[in-house]
Amino acid sequence: MTSVLYDAPGPKAKARNWLYSGIFVVLFGLALWWVLSLMAEKNQLDADKWSPFVTDARVWTTFLIPGLLETLKAGVIAMVIAIPLGALLGIGRLSDHAWVRVPVGAVVEFFRAIPVLMLMIFGFALYAQFTTVSSDIRPLYAVVTGLVLYNAAVIAEIVRAGVLSLPSGQTDAAKAIGMRKGQTMVYVLIPQAVTAMLPALVSQLVVILKDTALGGSLLGLAELLSMNRQISANYSNTIATLVVIALIYIAVNFALTSFASWLEGRLRKSKKGTGAVVGVGEVDDLAAGAKTAGG
Image 1 (spheres, rainbow, N blue to C red):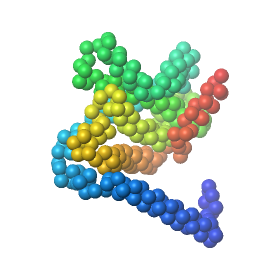
Image 2 (cartoon, rainbow, N blue to C red; image 1 turned 90 degrees about the horizontal axis):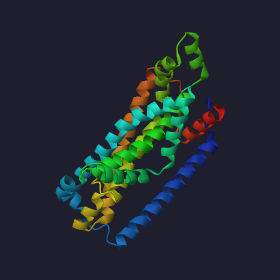
Image 3 (cartoon, helix red, strand yellow; image 1 turned 45 degrees about the vertical axis):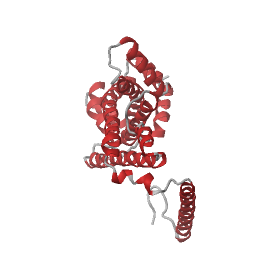
Image 4 (cartoon, rainbow, N blue to C red; image 1 turned 180 degrees about the horizontal axis):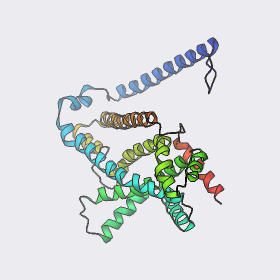
């Protein structure tokens, strides 16, 4: 049996795949056993290290749940601002007018080139020096500012790459029926590009959630990962706390990607997509190609 993209594996190929899978499972099992052995030697598997997460509700009500809510608050605020701002910047980079395209391109490239942590620190300093923002909420403002500036620039490239991934016939057809550039972008290209850029966009949203931890490490934001220090100080279980926090991050990000997969399926069933998909690694390649073509 043959697919459009590849030949179905034969008996030998299937046997090799099963062999490779078996080897991987064995190696993974050995690595897991080695890690657990090291933890046991250091008494990290003792019940008193893990039992507080089951027997003491204060671990959750005082530390983990408030930290998770702070992480979600910073992440959601940044997403709500960064997505529309990034879309506008991405559309601006596709403008036929150089006076729009060039400045927008400079802004996008500038903020893409600066580490998000530096933007957070710079924002914190600005709020401290030139505003009356309270020190209690200043870390949240700084983290959201850094996340918005950096991720809006990245989302702009995702949007631009998504539009450029569409067949040129879409634009030609819109021109043939007399649609202007703005109408073509709003009513033809953007609706179809959404499904193409959704995987890369969701990956960037996951990055936003994880990057809130930077604010907790250096700026004092009381987000999820920063709760590790307080829990460890009270229960002396650093490794167990980090494992639990990691599982919470995995659960939240899995929920986000699952919702995105459901949404992508709905969009594709509505026949608004072209079947093109823009991956995270393709954004820079498509953007670079467009820059070269545009001179």
